[in-house]
Structures are given as structure tokens and as C-alpha cells.
Length: 348
Image: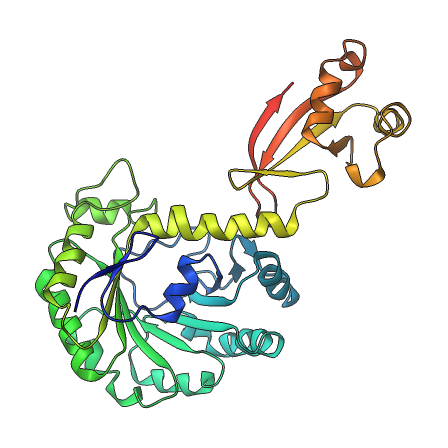
């Protein structure tokens, strides 16, 4: 068996899991079910804003009502969604509600769930049969694999997903070998990441950080070594590098969301939504747009003491010496997420 490379620069053996395929395409939304988790991994990357809090988010959007989920799926043109956390199974009924909502609206929508639960309560996962398609378990050792054997006949595609931790070669070998012999479909090896949340714990353990990325040095080399060692094993192994999540998967989702949500007068530049901003007497600005340069109403919006329009209109006004004394012009570039966070503000 040969090792294959995806266009997102990830490596895998045998067959790539469907959840990973959709993720690479930017077709997966991410549903953070809850920040609660009882596993307590020293390397947990979840932010302080979400950690240990029972709140839900879809992509960068806090879920206030169930309809927010369907709106975000539509905005991103998603064909699948990942349930993550925290540990989603701590709130299994919430998972069921969300999964039913999604499947009732999009019956072919692919749902995968990531969990650290491996104890006796895991049998409750049966509630999700027919709604969740793929379940990925985070395990710490071979025993975690053995604890899951009695559920492998359930109607899910089961896999293992773990961080590739430098110095843990033997432990990870035992997990991969056990997962293969137990009958799991795949093992995902995630490049080991450091965040503001886990920095202290990782520093105390002597890990070496790559200052150009958010990754721990040695994680990629370890993953590729494991793929080479087990490329003939009858289980798919996929190494997911940091660039896949940060520069490819997210970018492709943002590109699609920008196209689906941009207003008539907005343009897209390098995944950002670009528009002009005019500040001053709103009525005077609107009258000028309508009467002097004769643009249609779909070419601008008013919001408080500002008028948003095409960036070229803002640029034209800034070059008019008389108008620019009364009207402040700027070009605004925003991330194409629900709250439209400003990425760059350029006064003219």
C-alpha cells in the first residue's frame, strides 16, 4: 500500500474517511456542542471562553436558537458537520436534538462526532444511530480501545482520533495496532498544537514549539513515521497537519460563505469582504448618492451614523475636496463570519 497525499497536504493510507474529505473541501461546518468534558487532557486546546462552559457554537457563531444552525449551514454551503467540544456525549440529548434538526432539513448531511468518552456510559451512543454517521474516539492508550469493543457492531463508521505527541511513538503504535485488530475503520493523527490554554502545561513537559506556527516540533515527523510503519495495515491512517485546518479547510469555508452572504455592493478579496464606509450626516450622504451620482438603493445600506457602499464610491468621495470635509471615507475589510469582524480599516 502506498501513502497518498491530498491537495491539502495531508497524508493517508487506504481510504480517507468521508468526514475528512468534506473537511478538506471546506464543506464541513463545526458545531461546538459543549465545553464540558471529564477527560481532562493536559494538552486540551479549547479556549478559556469555551472550556467547561455548557454553551454551543456553530463555526464562529454562538447558538442562540436552533434556527441559527440551519442558517449557518446554508450560509457556508456545508454538506456535513462535525460535533465537537469539550465532549459532545456529555450532553448526548443535545447532540440528538441537533442531529435530528439537521437530518430533517438535510437528510444526506454527513455528521461526525468527536468524543473522549470510553466508559460504560458510551453505550448511550445508540441513541444517535441513524442520525450521526461517523464517531471518532479520543483514547489515551490500548485499554481505551478495549473498552470500546462491545459497541463496534452499532451502525456508525468508527474511528480513532488522537494528537500526534512527540516522544509517544510506542504508545501510539499500540493504539494503532489495537484499533486495527479491533475493527476500527481509521485512525486520525492530528498535528500537536499549542494554544494560550495549554501553553503552560506543554512548556512544563519540555515540548519544543515552532514559533512560525501553532504546532509542537516533531509532531509531523512522528506522524509520517507512523504512516510509513503501518502503510500495509488493514486500517486507514490519516495525518492531519495544522495547515489543513488553518489555511485550507477554514479558508475554503470562508470563501464559500463570503460568496453566499456578501451584499450587492460588496466585493471579495482574499476571503475578506470589502466595502466602503461613509461617516457624517447620513441624510446628506444618501441624498448625494441618489441625486448626484445616481446609484441605486441596492448599492448602499445605512447603519446608525454610517453608510456602507462600494469601496470605489468611498474612494471617489474621498478625492472630492469639498465633500471630504463633511464626509469621512474608509475602506473596510471584514472576515466573512456571522458577526463580520473587521480585519482591516483603511481611512481615505
